[in-house]
Length: 244
Image 1 (cartoon, helix red, strand yellow):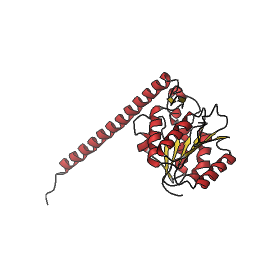
Image 2: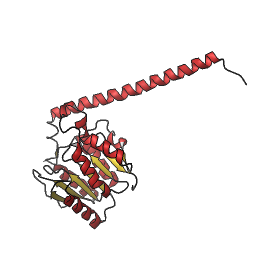
Image 3: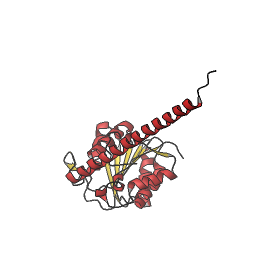
Image 4: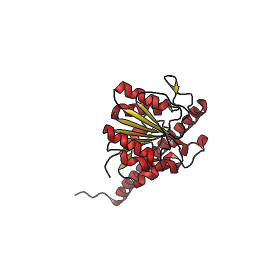
């Protein structure tokens, strides 16, 4: 057996440590710069589009970040939900967008819930509920509909009151209805990150993080979240991976 001199062994070890530290710093710096650039671009887009209120789907205002809407349609196409539950109707544009996707897929329906919607867009696949999304009666109506159609795949989209306490109540209220393999989409977590959106803090991102800590049956799907680098919804895709 050939023994390496202790001095050379020490030098090799220190070189390896320095190399790993250097690579670690580079990875950290790259991640930091990517996130900084993303936030800068998002802030500029928010300013340019009046917080995306000019985004339209077939002429209807849908008030969605375009990349998030694109990812949403990919997930709907991939998972083909039997029912999509949306909290936060506003003017009905996003429900209309989702119904159009269901039309193209030839399956699915939408339940859109809002305590006081500005307006709605009629569509045979959409049921509008005028109620608080955390009202037990509204949750029960959704549960009954899921049971009636024997839904196997469900997509829950949370886009109503963005304050942390409310989002957590929504998560706790609807999570038991979500089957394994289905998703909860928590929108607008960037409220917790962008200086230009200093409202309703703590907000959706912090609610999602808190929920995940207490619910190991759900995991954060980072691939979907960062699929196109820019995201308006950090901690925005939660997948159920086990029954309890």
